[in-house]
Length: 103
Image 1 (cartoon, one colour):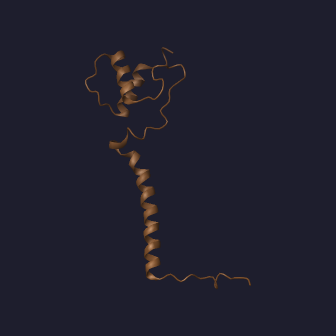
Image 2 (cartoon, helix red, strand yellow):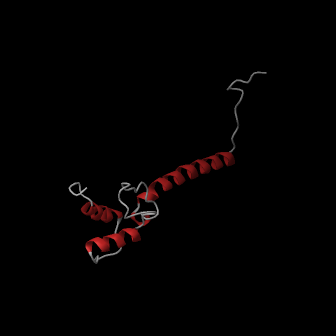
Image 3 (cartoon, helix red, strand yellow):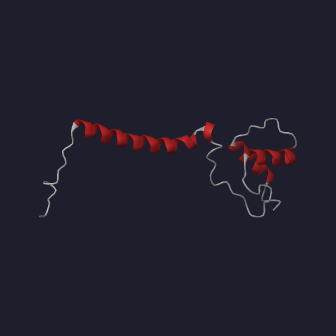
């Protein structure tokens, strides 16, 4: 026997509707949470993505962490005033180290 869409209805009771709504809300809020958390300043160290350097730059071999960057900056610039740099500050310091003029 061929079923039609009208004959294939599912009757949801109140409990089923509540469960379905809770599951849908859980999916939406968890995906929103996972999308927003990497944008928060407190979690920027855990979600560093796409940090890559030219193959000719051998200063940051392996995993480029903040500690590795600070050690290189201290060797290049001298003693730093602050050691807890944000990734934006690290980017600005890196731009000062590598220029187009000197290869």
